[in-house]
Length: 213
Image (tube, rainbow, N blue to C red; front, side):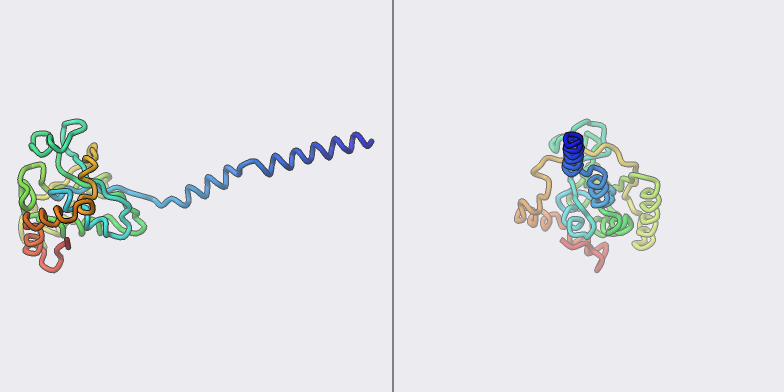
């Protein structure tokens, strides 16, 4: 009898120990998934991508911005290739954002106020199809909102808007030295922006709504 009781107690102890040590996989997985906010992507082209990043980086709800190239036919393009204007790619910016904190409409408004939509074949001092302004939509809802916003801008400015709207294609990240250029090279960035006349032209188009440097 003593031996039987001892065996039962030993077995119970082993079971309790294993249960206590086993990872709570279900609860851990649930916690991880609920902690991650929903994210979406927006892609815009507004001329030199150096000058487009700052405004969006300051926008609450924007998680990250990435400078890159899209819309063309060359695979894995380099800056040297894109700047020739022969790849079909455009200097663009990919924005990852939390839709619970910032809406796509708000991103569109910020985009418009940081470009000159009345300028064709380029933006500010940068001329050529690789610098033209564009909105790349990722779903039907973005397409609808982009088209509606373009119509609103045309009515507001009373001029033709040359900004194109197309379905998003493969996005290629630009070289590392282009990412956050305004942070890495603030003096060169400010000089380029001033020399390009970007802020003066934005002020002329948008008045007090113009995007800030």
